Image (tube, rainbow, N blue to C red; front, top):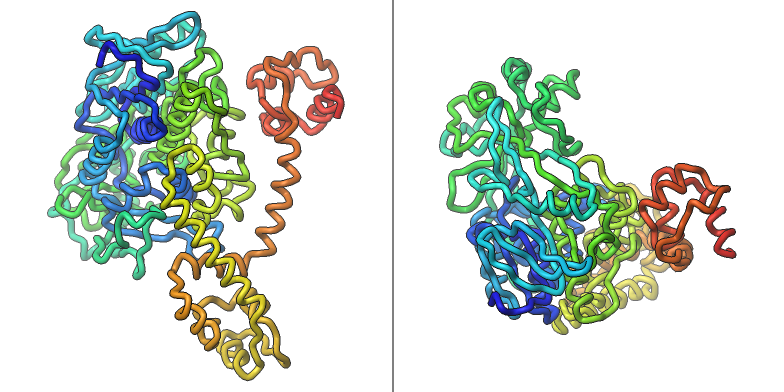
Amino acid sequence: MFNEVYDVIVVGGGHAGSEAAAAAANMGSKTLLITMNLQNIAQMSCNPAMGGIAKGQIVREIDALGGYSGIVSDTSAIQFKMLNKSKGPAMWSPRVQSDRMRFAEDWRILLEQTRNLDFYQDMVSELVMDKGRVSGVKTSLGIEVKAKTVVLTNGTFLNGLIHIGDKNFGGGRAGEKAATGITEQLVSLGFESGRMKTGTPPRVDGRSLDYSKMSEQPGDDKPEKFSYLDTTKPLANQRSCHMTYTSELVHDLLREGFDRSPMFNGRIKSLGPRYCPSIEDKINRFADKDRHQLFVEPEGWNTVEVYVNGFSTSLPEDVQFKAMRSVSGFENVKFFRPGYAIEYDYFPPTQLMHTLETKLVEGLFFAGQINGTTGYEEAASQGLMAGINAALKVQERESFILKRSEAYIGVLIDDLITKGTEEPYRMFTSRAEYRTLLRQDNADFRLTPKGYDLGLASEKRLKRMEEKREESQKFVQFFRDTSVTPEEANPVLESKGSATVKQQGKMFKLFARPNIDIDDVRKFKAVEDYITDNNLDREVIEQAEIQVKYSGYIDKEKNNADKLSRLENIKIPANFDYSKLKSMSFEAREKLNKIQPVTISQASRVSGVSPSDISVLLVFMGR
């Protein structure tokens, strides 16, 4: 294998690396996945869960394109919840609690069954360069492997430093060594690097907890699943999570150790994730709160190990233990391991193109935490896109870029390369201006045809999506065409406190009322007969309901997206020199010269660039 020239080498076997390797190999590229420990492929280093607010939409998008994260989330799930169901469908977000060991095992099995994919266990310490472009990698054992493209997905391993109280040691994850050499080489090549921090809570023995003092958090009564494929059925049995709270006493005990905290004594200088702060951060930032939620999450079907979500910390282990024993239900807790913080190198993502290829080195791609993001889902989606574009580059095909109006993945990558990030970036629904279009329920409609064209999504997957779309469109048309009499409609309307009708009218109008749902209209005989006669499944019924109830919002967002796409189509010449546009503000010229946006639309999203700066640019380009 060492004499071969690979199309794509993927460095790192986390969520980004796994998706990158699978995508490139499935697209027909000869691919090599090199990772420091093949036993830890797709390891859930932090919480044992996939999805959540906006992250669930990303997993659905990965699945629709033909990635593996949704499939593995289903096969390893122990609980399913659709979050935000009380809000509109743009906010619905699927989430699964996963069996940590089964998740990694299922990923490993899927990758081993993937054609064109080889594996090798070693640390990559150096990139091999040839006339300004990457031509392979060199490992710590001195082995050189040639490649046409390289995807770096190093996670938290680049010069990783683990902190527990006043102790620190090199490592990329508990029990695993850090990766060295690559940061220094990339800096010598002209890349800008920085440091970031993340953390993880203690893992505890579930047998030592008193769940009677906590509130149970069961899964959904009718659980769904992530993947649009029939790889597995929805869960028949589920494991519950539990919830408890910290208290003033817990906070006081934690404060006693603040002088030994690397976060407060200056030992940790980098920024941690704003939206997943450590417990000491929460106590400090939200001093007015006398308690914080803790979610007690089982790590699998057959293990007693428990993840204490909300208690992320780098305090000394004796402080962690003493404080946790004062949490309700944790009075007799036994630790499997303490929480810790980890600092690692990252590279500001403004140094990338939309394809995730670096601007400085041709053929070199970055994906995941190396780009300053946090979260399995964000990493996996970047890995998928980097793997796709590395394969396309080798195959001399047009690159694949998702617009902000097409996918949360498009929002994520555009945010990263246009705005950069000073702290670990996490996706939220609020970051997407087209969230009514980018729902979790329609990711297959949006992206499966694209995945099929790439060679990732199968014909079976495409056909299934087309049937679902056709059936839901016919069901919506049924509501537009079918009338209902006042005698049939009014009892249903009265039961929901909705205004009654005096004459016969189309069902579509009644169904579109905010307080009328599918269960209400199924009381009309014609509706129930249509569902039964056409054997409609839950996905089709749900899709039709959303199309009826939110048609106005959806049409409005489509119009806005169409208007903005005109600016997306106005290309800016490569390596454009903004310094010559003297009418533009100095800040705008400086930022635009650094980012080098590809279109007018992207230029308008660069922080520090005003509408008047864009007007100057449009005038210069003859618009």
